[in-house]
Length: 124
Image (cartoon, rainbow, N blue to C red; front, side, top):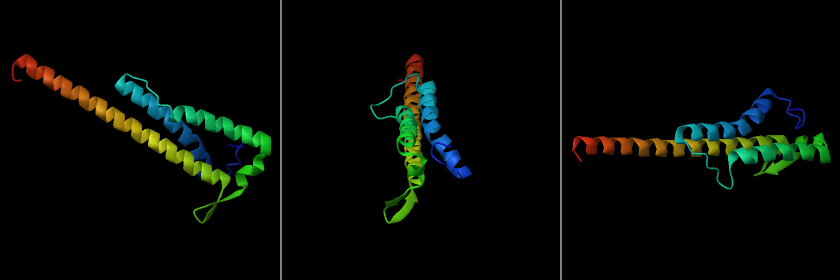
């Protein structure tokens, strides 16, 4: 948290939650689908890369980069707030994609079991 000058408790919580959400979602999806397939752009790898880039930026430019104001859509945010918003959105998208994949996989398994049971009983 000190690397990116996250002084507020909500900033610290989101900085911890957002990257970990992607890892949790990928692991949860693997548990339910019994497959671990990551697309080219995925939450776990981008989370690790983002943390590494944050440390490198702080080392190269200094910690003041995180308090630098950035103009976004007519709103002035600090660089850390902008990153928190982006990382939280990426984590949420990864979580939603994992939930969708698990729902599809479980639904396909259930339909397969129902069809197999119907074949066994001669009702199909």
